[in-house]
Structure formats: C-alpha cells, structure tokens
Image 1 (tube, one colour):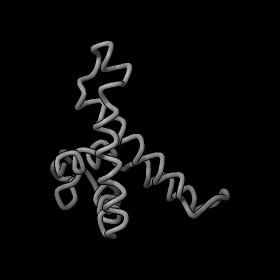
Image 2 (image 1 turned 45 degrees about the vertical axis):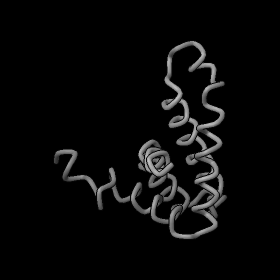
Image 3 (image 1 turned 90 degrees about the vertical axis):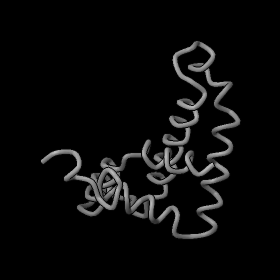
Length: 109
C-alpha cells in the first residue's frame, strides 16, 4: 500500500484527521489553538535551535506547536489506569501526525 492509499480525507491517516476535526469542531478550542499558534510564532525566533542556525523560525514554530498539540491532547486523556482502552487510545494517539496538524494551523495564520 503506497502513502496516498493510506491517506484519509486529505490527512495522513484517520487518527490525524479525527484529531484535527475535534480540535477545530468547537469555537473555544479553535480560538485556543489559533492563539497557541500565534504564541509559537512569536517565541520561535528566541529558540536555541534557531539562534544556532539549525532551524528556521518557521521550523521552530512548527516543532513548538506540534509538541504542544501532542502534549496537551495526550495529557487530557480521560483514561488514567492501565486497561485495554488506555492501550488502544495510546496506540491511536501514536499514529497522529502532530506536525501535519501544526502545519494546518500555521497555514491559516
């Protein structure tokens, strides 16, 4: 199966699509992530990787936002104890392309 056959509604996979959908499904959540995107853009020039010349400002904003998305979404998991459901949720979250969702928000700015 090639990469294009794995795509789902234009996204890398179902897990990425459904995560992006839920993040954009609610006005308050939309506003929150758009503000987070602006914050990542503002603070990315001060990133050490940018100052050392390893990343561009845009790359720093992308990586910061993707990391923030992943951390906040996974930390809000409603399942705390070890179980079949926790393992399945964890596996699904591992498949999310956080960089692609970050790109989506950065492109809208």
